[in-house]
Length: 259
Image 1: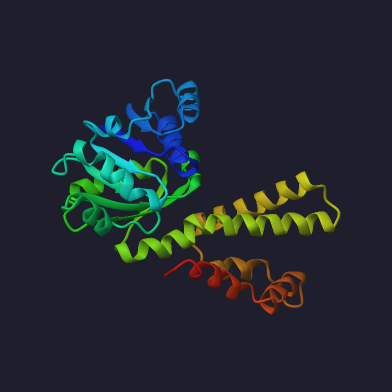
Image 2: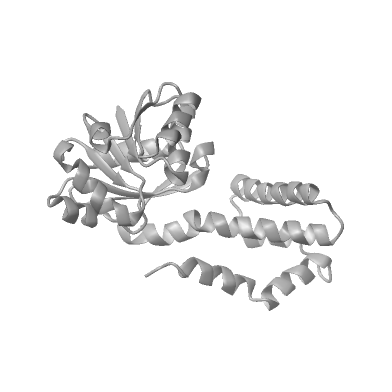
């Protein structure tokens, strides 16, 4: 399989690094207008093919992944259109809110289009990617895209209307988790730990919670019950979160970016 990726910024770079480190894809071409970015990729991953020419990048590709800003998508699609073979190539939009129907509208015809939203943990094989297929996309093409993104973490095939909520939960949501970790670190510092110690504690606590829920399949409330005793200190802290509107704030943050 020949994979072409247009855009090697934060998100594109994370995907590319995850795919390159896996060793599961031998033919990857990346295109970016920043020659310094491409140079750094060549140094780190010598087997990657690089170019500043988007049209060159997509020639002969089986899957084309577009990881550019949403407002650049129409421009990039118009640029590569003369080189596309819409009967055989699969085009994947990783641009927020740039759906398969928008690809079809821009190119002027139906094709094998997929809308996929990962997150920056892809570099470490820990992304959560939401994938939706366009109306003319075959099940085989969808499976190929899912297998591609599964290299970089978990995947979930959804209706296209659920990609944006998924993005808020996992792509934007990763930032919200970081903010909680930062707050926990600040609390640790206030209570007497050095910042690096507080970071270690916060990260291991987060990892422990995730590992526990994954291993047991418990609902979070089941796990909470295990550490919450009547009149104990845990319930006091949980009640403080509730008094501060913690649950409501999280839900509002997730819904804030939806149309």
